[in-house]
Length: 152
Image 1 (cartoon, one colour):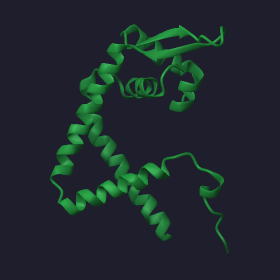
Image 2 (cartoon, one colour):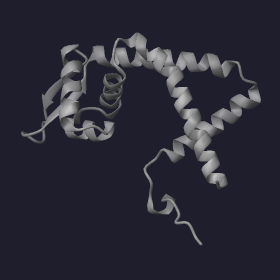
Image 3 (cartoon, helix red, strand yellow):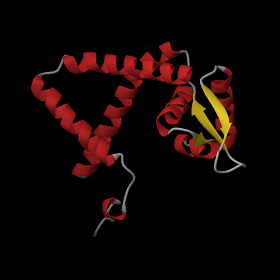
Image 4 (cartoon, one colour):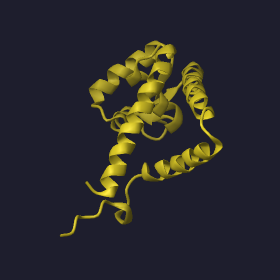
């Protein structure tokens, strides 16, 4: 296993464990993980089409329709005509939906803050730098950053 593969494997495992830890906080929101995730995209991406929302979440449009139906039924999102395209519908968060998502996010951040607070100042700084790197690698790949072919 190469150094890059070892780092990627450890990062993958650590990310899953952190997400599992924080998922427990999400349960208090009253929404399922898929609904909470879709609501997050709507809140942070602004008004969005169902097709774009489905693509962002990696699900089919019929699956996303069911999720949005549930969110709309709970008063968390609304469907509105697209002002520039009469055939399109955009989904936007309601004030209630935005508040619910921001409260859920605050709970996750608080839970993570408690764990970070237990670390030494050096480890906190290291984790901050690691978060910066993780943000960089999570950006869409460009030709210059695409995986290199193995030589040899």
